[in-house]
Structure formats: C-alpha cells, structure tokens
Length: 282
Image (cartoon, rainbow, N blue to C red; front, side, top):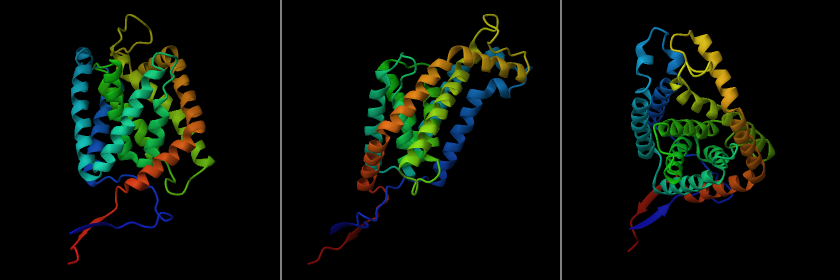
C-alpha cells in the first residue's frame, strides 16, 4: 500500500489557517465568557454584592477555573484541527516566544514576544493564535519564574491578543505594506488592551484605604471606572506605551521576513492536505 497526498502545484497553494470545529468554537466562547467574568467582576457585581468580602480568595478561585478552561480549549482545538505538524509548529513558536520574553523583561515594556504573537495569529488563524498565546505565556513564566495566581489571567489575555490578529480582515488577499500597517496598528492598540486587562486582574485587590484609585466595593460602577482609569494612567501607561512602540517597530521592520517564513512553513506543512491510501500495484 502506498501513501499519496493530494496537493496543488506550488504556485497555486496558499498558506491556510488551522480551522476550528463547532466544539472548539464553543469551548473558546466558554473560556472567554468566564475570562470576562474573571476580569470584569468589579464592574459586573452590584455594590451590595458579597463578592468583595471574598476578594482575597478570588485570584485563586479564578486561577483554578481559568487553567482548567484553557486546558479544555487546547484539547478541543487539538481534536478538531491541530495535527502533528501543527503541534510541532506550535511548540517551535511557543519556545521562540518564551525565549523572546526575558530579553526585555523589567525594562520599560520592551517585550518583543508580542509582535511574534500578532504575526503568528495572522497567518495561522484565531484558534491557533489563542492556544499559542496561552502556551507561550505559560512557558515563558516557567522560564522566568513568574508563576503565580496571575498566570492564568496572563495566559487568557495573551490568548485573546493573538486570537484577535487571526480575526483581522483579508487573510487571503491583503499583502504587502497595507497588511503590515494593519498589523502594526492592531499590535499598538492590542498592547494597550493587554495592559489594561491585566490591570483589572490586580486592581480590585488593592486596599481602598491605601489609595484613592483603589477599587471600592461600596462605590457605584461609574466611580470605580473613574478610579480604574486613574490607576491605569498612574501605574502602567509608560509600560504599555513601550510595549506598543516595540510591537509596531518590530512588525514594520521584521514583519515581512517573519510573515514569509510563517506562510512558507504553513504551505509546506499542508495542515489540511488530504491523505489517501492506494493499493500498491502488483
């Protein structure tokens, strides 16, 4: 029996993203919904809610839930779309991203891993991007010793970051300078969004007596929103700006070469190439 793969001529083949099945989409929606609740509960819970009384337990509770849900999403996507070739590419990209993160860790938001997440999500699709972002953040945290109750929030936020790049328009048609500008613009905005979302993970657990920008469980939503904006401006604006600028610069300078390499590897991997078995001729 001989193995035969059905492929198109090289000139006609295009890099195609890893597709998601219905169960994978449902799992992604579920983990995202729980993530929104985990990040946004200070604005979702009414002032009279008893959630604030268990504020010290919330990070561990949400951490455990998010780790389980991220594992469910990874398993579902693996079942529906990630074959051995895609898993190998996932491992290579996650290892590369994890190695890039310590380069600028602790230095004014210089985090080169973000541009790789944007370009990988763009080429390989939103589902692959979500898993890649989560796995990369987990691996880099092990590498840098940054494991704690905040890690699941980082994994989820980075998953969203990379997934969003896969949802940008024109994945099969838009190329060249226009695509780079779009990816750079997305990276700039998403870098701020990532920092803002991560601020929400820790901000509610500041003592209200320690600062007038801390979360106050007795205050109305509008007042807490104003406190949160002031907190972001005072604590993370400079860091987020550094991350955004580095992402834009690397996307515009290294983006063309990295996109070509990713698309070439995706075409050669032929994730969706059908494989048929023919009886060997006697």
